[in-house]
Length: 447
Image (cartoon, rainbow, N blue to C red):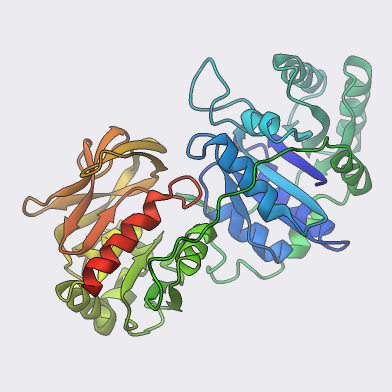
């Protein structure tokens, strides 16, 4: 598989906009399979809009290496080229003295040539020093070329390319001019989602214009030079257990954080998935499983509070024992009320005797490790939220935390009847126990 990985020297280097522009241009000549390294929901939305293929997450912390490699091999089949977007700086990961959970770890595991995006704002010779440092830091990482971002003009471009040619042996694959108006809009969880108003208007043209001075043909050559990759076959994503059941999945501006593999796992196990939009007034569908993903419910709390058919439907479904799983924002909607960032309180479903409120700072680390109560199984996931949940009465928990913040700093997964609400986002490839949990809950409801 032809493949390349676009990494940055740091967060904010411009790799997301540049990666997205490159994916868009490459899609003109064939099928591009996009990937995002690390836990992320928003960047893959852009990837999918620009390539027409679901973007897949690859994660060295959550996923065992064989599972990750097998997943890459399966999902890249049928594409002409795979383009991976890194996370943070190339070498940033979980630990100070290892590459665990870093972009570099994935580059080595997948034997993927790296194109390094350098934020060259106000730099000339220092950019060459930076590239030499990245190149020598880990010789097992194949930095095949660089893209110089934030280039202010022709004089700046000339000095940069002269310095790179003189001081390094790394190929300059292009420059990106400084155009602040072309950067993608930001929000507290990263980029805006594509459900936002004008986010799609002119997106493709804006991003393609960013990379008009990048040598796309040379990028394709570099991708074609990636060595053969031996990968184990990904385990079958079936196993049954949900045959004949319906899984209802809200999918709109408030509920938009789903890994496609989780939906695929439900369907592979036999469930029929039904998508609907509570923000737009849709009623809660009749279903055996209600899977409420994350997103931005606090921004649409008034619309959700006004959809009593949806909220009362959730409350009734819980009383009738339907399986219910709320992740982060989905859990917040299952609480009694939600207080938005302006301090306004909105009535929610009341499945959990708890209140959710927005916080001014991010709560907890990104990666989570937990033990499932009952079978003691260890699992890895991630959390990223600007909210807190306060319980009004004691509830049982599904998970004891070894790493992470969860609901109270030590536990996550509050349980009410056949419903579980958690800050953890679990990935079906990384954690097959996620599907087993839902199957057990659904079979309990089926009786």
